[in-house]
Length: 292
Length: 292
Image 1 (tube, rainbow over the protein chains, first blue to last red):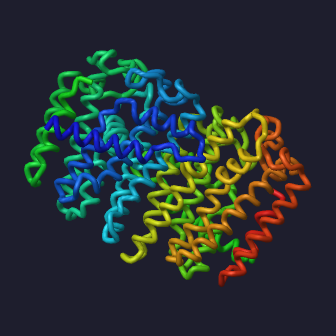
Image 2: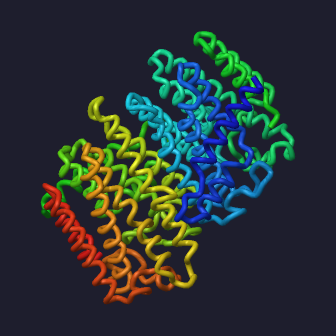
């Protein structure tokens, strides 16, 4: 499993390098900023999820790479914009200066915009032959829905709106389900859809994605409370300090752990109904049992 | 012509209202901010260009609306981000407070991100029947290329990089060709591509788009020097004050006017080679002869 993970991460990184290569005749600074943030040691969880889901549905890893890379570009853009002074105002990300600290705010805003745009250009290039226009389009649509106002951006908006407010479970569910969950779900579903999976199978993958997405965010909240700043490469305990809604803040640390494991169990139960999902099963474990 | 323009603008606005409608269960603030900026009295030049190009290639206006609306969403997101304090730091846009002044910076960043994402979701929905996946995908790809690092965002990056530097013609051509030109070209080309136009016809439309895109930006620079602030609804003579590269600054006002008319003439010459382009011809005139 570790070997497969490394292979898929390398495939993703190699493809990202090509997609984000400096284009001659265009400002070098925009590519430098995009590359700086994309190649900052991200775990590539979303691309690997997408690649594994696509493979489980019969598509080759190679043919799923455009969607996989698009997801990483979107994840990275969201971090760049999230770190901006007007948003979370973070100086460090994965142990290095954030994009606006390394470059400047204007460049960081534009690099995020360029990555988001490049993501769709990349996802739409997944047309191996003329039969795949339909699936490439459907996968890009899943990614757009997961990333936008009804997905990730909606979650970020709700997160900001609820800062310092009274903690409600409804708000917590919405924020966790959307801020992180939507793009993780889209990672799984876009892989399946790109591979032309049946609606029934897509539905199973969607539920699996929703469960590990939420488990991932809860694990993230727990790490924010209990993790090691050096290992994580970013400032911790900022969320609870800023009065942000976190799972441990509402349910307590022990109940949060229980919930994460329950979700993991349910997610793996769903995988039991789909063939060729051993890799995804191991990946789901990593989602919850990570230390950084 | 005026009647047709009004009709197309109304069709676009009606469709935009549907696409940007508040989605139940998601944060109202994000939709409010998106709607605030999209419905701020924009001239809808990009959507109308797209609709007219599509119609000239045999597609109905209705079937081209998704691409047309996507272009307006991208144009609007670029204005929202461009107005941010870290970018142009503008308080007024079309006579009203800019998005970050009306809401706040974080909301403006997210509203721009959400509009850019929604643009692709919308463009990809242009699949009237199963034969149109290919054209919808190709149109969305044109839009992505026109909007990204090799298009509009590249132009904005170059614009910022060249602020206060010695004016070079090369930089001026790049900035004008990309900051405004790329998305205007993409407006025309995406319409043609969505309609399934031949490569030869698409090429003609592309050259037409490039010429009116540049003419439009030169006219914009001229208006910035000579226009009326009240009519324009924004602060003028900021660009030249900030040491930004403008056409009049490099070539003088009179030569700039001549250049704009030359480009307009050449653009209309190209239209002479394509059937059903009377509307586009009149629109091109408006691009150069506008007073606000």
